[in-house]
Image (cartoon, rainbow, N blue to C red):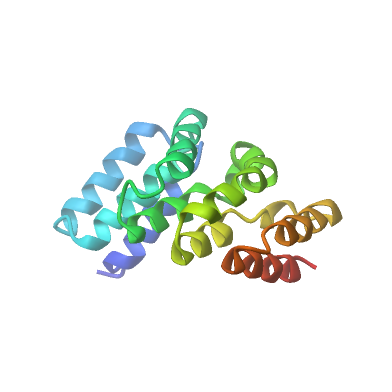
Length: 165
C-alpha cells in the first residue's frame, strides 16, 4: 500500500476537525482506521486527538472545562493528544476565546496545581499563536511577570512570546 498507517492516521486527523465533512463519515473513517491498526496504542492516541479536534463548540467547552478543572483525568500522554487536537488553524472561530482570553485567566491556577510536563504542554498548545498581535504579546509578557513563582510557566510564556515577535 502507498499509505502506511501513520499517513492514514494523519489524514484522519486532518479530516476529523473539518466542518466540511459529515460527522458520520468522520466517525466511520476513524473507526475503520482504528480497526485496521488493531486498536493499538497509536490508534487510541488518534481517537483522543480526534475527540478534541471535532468541530463542535459544545464538545470544545466540555473538554476545556475538564482540562482546567480535572487536569489529571487521564494519562499525560493522552492529555497531550487532547491538547494537540483542540487548537486548529481551521477552527479559529471556535478556539479564539479559549486561547486569547481564558488561557490567560487560568494560567496561575493551573500553574499552582499541575506539574511541569502538564504546564509545558498546556502553554505550548494553547498559546495564541494563530492570533498574534502586539496586544497578545504584551499580555503574554504581563502574565509571565505575574507567574514569577512558577518558573516553568513563566519561562514557557516568555519563550512563546519571543517566538511571536
